[in-house]
Each structure stands twice: as structure tokens, then as C-alpha cells.
Amino acid sequence: MSMPREADLSKVRTVPVAGRPNKVSAGEFATPPGGDHSFNAFVRSLPDVLKAADFRRVVDAVVSAHRTKRAVIVMLGGHVVKTGVGPLLVDLMRRGILTDVAMNGSAAIHDYEIARFGATSEDVAAGLRDGTFGMAEETGRGLNDAFVKGMAEGWGMGESVGRALAAEPALAHPELSVILQARSLGVGVTVHAALGAEIIHQHPAANGAAVGETSHRDFRRLAASIERLHEGGVVLNCGSAVIMPEVFLKALTVARNLNAGKPTGFVTCDIDMQRHYRPHVNVVERPTMAGGAGYELTGHHELMLPLLTWAIVDAIG
Image (tube, rainbow, N blue to C red; front, top):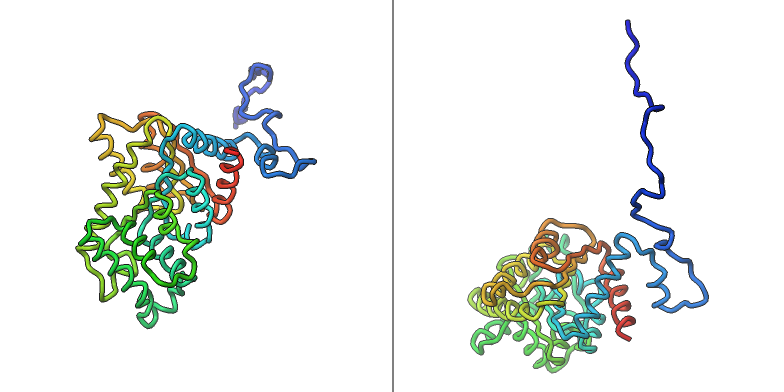
């Protein structure tokens, strides 16, 4: 029986390391804490590779958009509000950095409850056992009544919620409401509902026509805001795996349909604790194929968004 063949490694061709392209060099490594303990020093200490490099690029894109007066649109899922980072978004609005806020219905509900009652996020499993999950009277009544009034007055859903909160005689924490503060600061705020997916749609006061009319108006308003992304704007999708990526893609095509293919040349970033198909293709990939860049920053909202906010504010000075 013959022996199996073996490759003759003595005949392998090698190449000089000096001529080999490298993806990482020593100059890109992280640096340990030194005498400067400022936040700026921390950001500069990060390794200039992979997601740390992308983090810096996203910060630079937001700073550039702010300085060139392009749109900076943040899109929110409910968990962003529940993890307590709303005050950071409010601060970015006060500084004139965020120009528009778009959110799904879940985010609006949590924002409303924090502003009005100072607490949110019920025990779903416990409430589901006896059918009381999502049945809060004041939340369902207040928001649905706001939508009905908004339909009658020609308001969008975000505007309707903002006006309803502003009219409340006693709010627990108005300063923490992204919607209310956006309204007072003149920042565009839109809410994009998914009928049947939000607790307020099971309330006796629910009015499907009002939900549809006010949310569709906000869709048209978002499409108009997207026009200002052209050549330098930024879109941040934070914690919405389905609704906002789908809404954004359709609003973007409306904007391009009405503006001869514009906007192009903007930056998008999806920020979530895990990667999902729709944010990847509908936020990061497809919208930037005509020019621009898309990034993904993976991490928990309560860590990533404070880091991003501090870095942006520090860079703007």
C-alpha cells in the first residue's frame, strides 16, 4: 500500500512582510489612561480600528452636519425611552444638533407616560395572565383623545401628543419628554404607528381613523424633512428593528421621487444591542448606495447613546 501524498512545504513561495498589506498598525492601538482624564482624552484613546473607528466617523458626520446646517434625524424605538436616555436627546435638541425626531408608537407611549406619570414599562407577563396588560385607562384615553383632536385640527400624531402634554395641568416630568421638549424647541417630531401593535389600540377610546390620519400626516412630514439630508445630513436609527427602518425607506423614496433623486450623500447609522435584517438593509445599506456611508454600532442604548452624545458635544465644543 502506497503512502498518502503530502504537500512539500520546502517549495512554498513566501513574500517579504514589508510588501504585505496590513489591516492594523501599531499607530492605531489604544492608549491607556494618562494625565488627561477628560472625555476627549478617552475618545482619543480608543483604538482606530473596526467599530471604534466607525464611532468616530459617526461623531464627525453629526458634527459636520450641524456645522453645515444639514438635517440630523434620530429615529427611536421604545426601548430607547425606557432605558432613560431621553434627557440626552433633549440636550442635543437644545444645542440645535438634532433637527428632527421620528419614533414608533411604542416610544411615544413610554415618553407620554414618563412625562405625565413619571414611570412606564409594565410587567407584561403578569398583566397578560388576567388580560390587564396594556389596559391603563389614563394612557389609552389621553393619547387616543389627542389623536381624535389632532385629526379634527389637521395635526400630525407627534404634534397631537405634544399639544396634549402641554395642555395637561400637572405633569410629573415634562423636562424628560422628548416629544414635549421637541415641540417647545421647534424640533420636528413625528410618530409612526402600527395599528394593533401598540397598547393604546386596544383601549375603548381607540379610533382607527384618527390613528391613521395623524400618523400618515407624520409620514408626509418625515418625507419632507428627509429632503434636508442631501449632501451631508445624518440619520441615526436607535433601537427600532422594524417600524422605523420600513418607514424611513418609504419616506426616502417619496423624497427622491419628488426631488429628482435627491437626497444623496448622507450618512446613516443603526444603533442597537443586536443586528437585525431590516435596519441593515433599509437604513445602513440601500439608502447610501447612491452616495454616502452607512454604519452599525452594536451595544446597549444606556451605554452607546451616552457615549455618542458626550462625544458629539465634546467635538462641537
